[in-house]
Image (cartoon, rainbow, N blue to C red; front, side):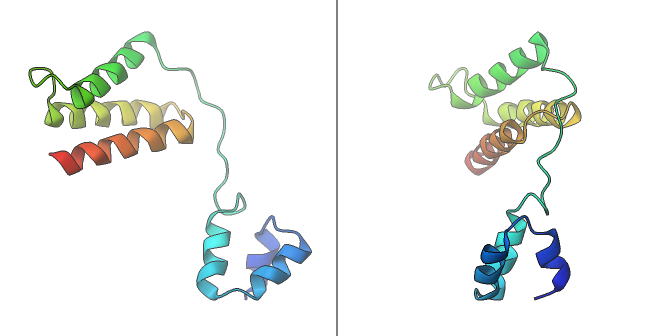
Length: 111
């Protein structure tokens, strides 16, 4: 175990000793999930505008609609991509960005 890995880890001494007994893969997984490696990020620059929220709603409606005349997966992928760009550029919550990525991934799988 490299000393820098333990120094940057938010784990306390007992937890560090327990990690040292684990496999290298488990150690790397623990470090990847820690805030020392993945900072929590800052506050959003601004909340989404009304138009941006409407774009998000349209992208969800376009993908999730059970009405065949409304559902358009390629258009949903495009709209979700625009939403992701906006959410990333304005530094929205990582949870929201992750959710958008998941939905866009689902849309890619369908198309």
